[in-house]
Amino acid sequence: MAVADIAEVRRTKALQERAENQALTRLTIGPSPWARAGALAALAVLAGIWLVPLVWGAVTSFKHEAEAALPASLLPTMGWTLDAYQKVLGSSDLVLWMWNSLVVAVLVTAITVLISAMAAFAFSQTLFKGRALMQWLTLAAIMMPGQILIVPLFREMQVLGLVDTFAGIVLPQVVAPVMVFILKRFFDAIPQELLDAARIDGAGSWRLFWTIVLPLSRSILVAVAIFVFIGAWNNFLWPFIITTDPQFMTLPVGLSTVKDAYGVQYAQNMASAMIAALPLLIVFMLFQRRIVQGVATTGMGGQ
Amino acid sequence: MTVSKTGVTAPAGPALSDRRSAEGRRPTRAATPRKPMRERDRSGYLFVAPFALATGLFLVVPTLYGLWMSFTNQSLTGTGSEFIGFANYLEAFSDPQVWQTLWHTVWFTILSTIPLVVVALVMALLVHTGLPGQWVWRMSFFAPYLLTSAVVWHLSNWMFQPDIGLLDTWMTGLGLQPLGWLTDENVAMFSIAGVTVWWTVGFNFLLYLAALQSIPAQQYEAATIDGAGGWRRLFSITLPQLRTITGVIVVLQLLASLKVFDQIYLLTKGGPNGSTRPILEYIYDTGFTNYRLGYASAISYVFFALILIFTLVRLLPARKEA
Image 1 (cartoon, rainbow over the protein chains, first blue to last red):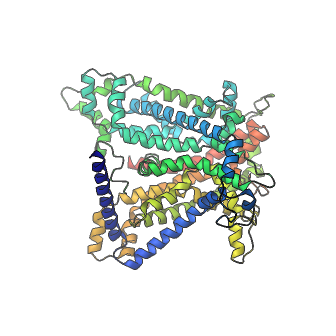
Image 2: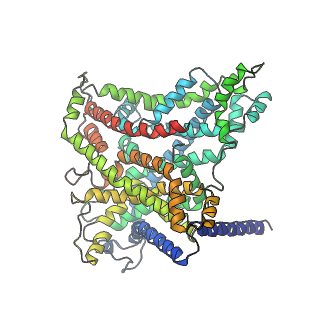
Image 3: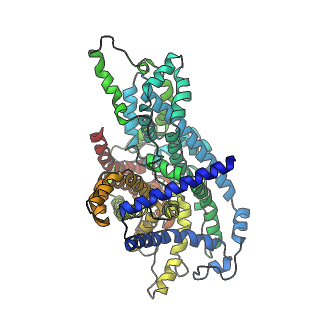
């Protein structure tokens, strides 16, 4: 019964979506079948171009190594094989790097979201000495590109003894002043009466933050978290500088050390690339709508 | 499949965001100045402390430390660190490598920004027609953005392989000469810009798509009733409404492109013959390969000055709106 209901809701939603899209088509390109066909063709060509590298990489990863080094043929002529995957998973640190990446990305995301939300709450809903100054400094911090700090930051990490540690990879990535302002803007719009009522009932700021502000802000928190996670998972420059020990390398850094010497193993390279690409692609397929929204809301840096 | 429908919306209208300034004026008129409760909440510094600590340690300290370093001859090997005044900066301004790598950075920025904005706009306009296959279009255009630079390197390096790569195969198939995609000084930067467009255009595409979805349908309906055709609606309604967002996307893209490092470092290591090396790679090489931390810091600050100009341009329109 319940399952049937969910299916019913899904179907209604899909129908509704289709109706909306059809209305949109009428409004944007009008009724002409030629115009529609033209737009569809353009979409197909663009999507084709965009998919070629991924598809070709995927196909190559299933080829025999001997065939991969021959001039390109789209489909394998010597048969499909999982050899490359077996070799890559068996002989390299790929799984370890993936695990490291997951640990780093999860830690960066959790810490960033928590401390940014707390700071945003402080700026939005409380008063304290130096609030104006702190806000001004946060705004100024947005203008500081992290890339130019690599040299002094590395030196600082040496002094702190954090080179080749997870703390060294994670901590410098949790400073996200833009996210503080995105969250602050959202917190500003929470009805003040709601917060005042809770305060009258004796709720302290800590409870206010956890039981009212955060639950009301779930959508923006998810958006920020998605954005931070993608950034941390894919970050290359900083992990590349701070790690030299393969034991602590994240996926992007580890993968970049897979050198192609003479007589490169293309099938294996492509298999590694596919394995590395898969987690985020799967997550994207599952939560496409959420991610599209999240990137669209946070991507502009709150503008 | 629209973003705006279930989009992230604030629980209250924009009018509320100006609450603070409105309250600031109120007490002068009200008989009993009823302070909002939050004004009495003085625990804020506890909430801001973790963020302040992290920012202080990993942003403010390195910023100041780097500035100080740029006036010294400090080296990564740790031997001696003397204050040498503006010597590093004087050297930077007369160092042809600085100017060359700065120019490569700007050249890459020009080559990548234009298609990254135009192609993203075309993609968004096409997808926003609501034609069938929405999921596939979005997936294909945005998927590369989710790849890490090392994966992009493996994939494109494979495409660019001389003779056996897909691109050379196609070139010879068309009866053309194979190109030195990454080995020809005149071609390499274009190849890198092309890879970058493929890799990151999905991000701008999403920003445009969200902007398109916020254009009210009534405007199109009204135009249709007035007899405006598809092209007319595109040029008279859609494009004018995208002017603001285009400005924002262009500036964001300029800032992102100026900081290019990953794909160039991985694809060409700045070569062939240093012809694609961006300034960030020069900073990296100076600091971590040649161990000249002081000089690398000085170049960082020269580069920072360039970025700051673009950042300030970005902040200007935001001020006007506020």
